[in-house]
Length: 106
Image 1 (tube, one colour):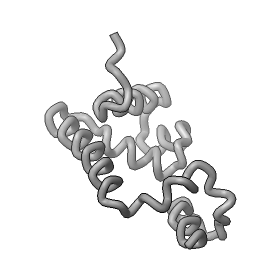
Image 2 (cartoon, helix red, strand yellow; image 1 turned 180 degrees about the horizontal axis):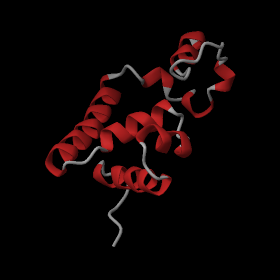
Image 3 (cartoon, helix red, strand yellow; image 1 turned 90 degrees about the vertical axis):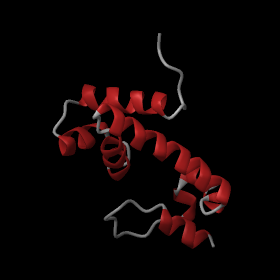
């Protein structure tokens, strides 16, 4: 079971072997990733991003996907999106607010 969890945490395009002990904070989360509660949480977060993007003409979902793809490496994400790092940082912070994970700054 732990081997499956480690394989699921491997970065996209990564060919090397990932050990369970190396997946860090994902260890306690992996047993729940296919639970209905996790799916509802995920849908709530992702749906709010899609709705915001549609209503406001933003590309926060694209930014999130790129950030995940690059393991939260701001520089790589900015290069892929052809945006300044500060722009990507702003988008990610705004994304957390849109999702309800951070309060709106006053």
